[in-house]
Image 1 (cartoon, chains in turn cyan, red, purple):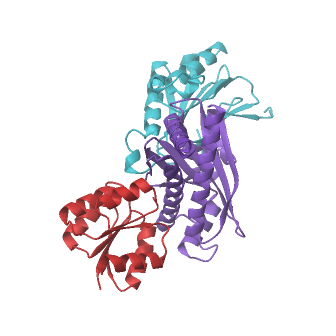
Image 2: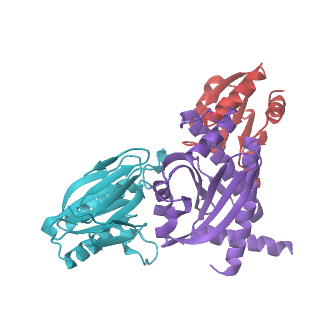
Image 3: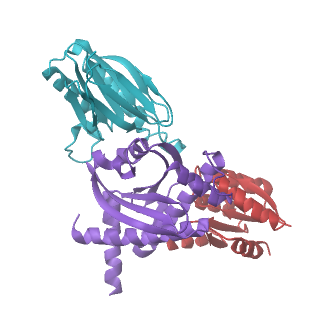
Length: 167
Length: 118
Length: 203
């Protein structure tokens, strides 16, 4: 076993990254209604992650310089960069994490339930990219943090005040 | 002894107001939103109403209008943190007899109730 | 945002915040002062850094603003501070509260009501606008997850947000918190237009 010193790369809202550096750990902290697209190719040892905020770029009320805040734009961006680094779509293992319903009141049930809409948009975008979803941790009413180790492809999800689950 | 309807969506505020008004020797009935407030008024005909404004389902201003439509002599005081002039004026126009800005103190509530039920 | 607009915005936020803190002091019976009022423009990727990191556990009290224009208000506390506030509001001995019960949640919600209403009333009375706070929503989670509630709405408009962030402290108590105001573009514009016409009229 080779020990590698790891380095966390925290992705803020609307940020994404693809890496083949075995020292990298890609992280999205405190996902609420946001959804993280987490993808790994175990053969090419390339991993990617996007911290997505909104389901659809057609919702935008003005031009954006951060396309990755939208689910429909972020997923193709990450997949394209994965392929550029030698990953193959048929080998890509995808996890979707987040999409919680943070507001419980009735007024928040419809239009403001952005968590459900992000989750649904992410499933659609993954299918459209001809990828297979290996696992989901979506919905609920609590925030999550997700980490992806590039060296091993191991993904962990943790919640506030609770333990971690490995995928 | 009079019957007072306390309408507030916050359980914490109801707890405080109910204790205060009971201490003054009145009977208390409670409502947790505007819809409940209107139906409680119609079924119990309380002597006075202490009505919050910011409530789900039906806010206090709408509930006030419904209660005044049902009983033009209804004695309703708005008890709210919203001291905006426009809102005070609108409440008085809609038939509110008084306006208490929260956080309230015991003396102010006592004075309002005396005025309402006298 | 021009300098004139941002000056006016700063003035109104300062006015509203001072009024909100006096409401909070009145409610808790403890003098609470503004320790720092920061007005900034934060890129979206940094929003959650406002509260000591996205994974920090926090209690958030969230209100939306409607009426003449829309906006969002959020109060955030470390859990132990939220519990200290509940003790104060319920008249319990310090240290009595160590979890969020329904009644404690309601007490914090009422605190949100008072702060939101006092903040908005001060601004409404100066500008002549009607600004209505929604019923409060009390949440406890990672700060990042709480910020998502705000961000989704803001990021529809732009990639960065105007944020007014007040840190407040109580004299002689270990109490502090953050009060955030996020206006929409429409609200900023409405506030500035309204307060300009008011001050012109006063001259």
